[in-house]
Every structure is written in structure tokens, then in C-alpha cells.
Image 1 (spheres, rainbow, N blue to C red):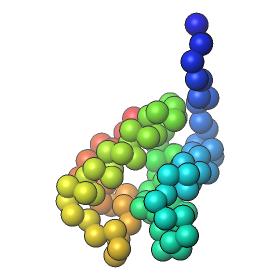
Image 2: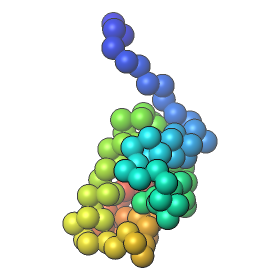
Image 3: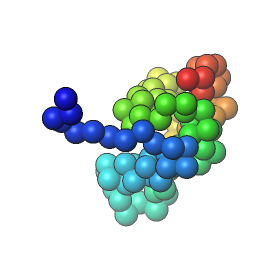
Image 4: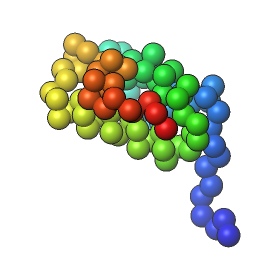
Length: 99
């Protein structure tokens, strides 16, 4: 019974624009040009996430992005100088891109 909200499974091509839209919607300062697009994530990281997602439910994408952000915060990644990229995430969580 689907009486709630239903979010469709995303194809790999739909993931980057989906992530970009969500980040834009929740950005604290939408006018900060240094923090637009995929910030705090590297574009290639989002592409790798999309390519690795066998079941791309929006909830699963949010969970993985949140996990990457928590590791960046725990490791004091300076987001003024770096973005969260695949190399950083794979170093912290070697099987991050394994579904």
C-alpha cells in the first residue's frame, strides 16, 4: 500500500542532477559561488557514486553522501581548500563504492 511518498529508483544518469538539485535546495548561502554545483563534493566523486549504484534509491544516495560528509568532518577535511573526492572517501572507507 503506497499511501505515503514514493520516490522512483534513479538511473546512473539521473543521479548527478538529482544530487545537484538537492544540494542547491538545502545550501545555506545559495549566492556563495565558491560553494555551488556539487559542493562539497567533487564532480568525479558524484559520477563514481552514480556508476557504482546498482539500486539508486534516493534514500540510499542521501545515506552515502551523509556518510562521506561525516568522514570529512571527523577527519577535519578543510572544505575551503578541498572537496570530498573519491580518493579521500576510498581511503576512509575502502568499500564505499561497492553496493
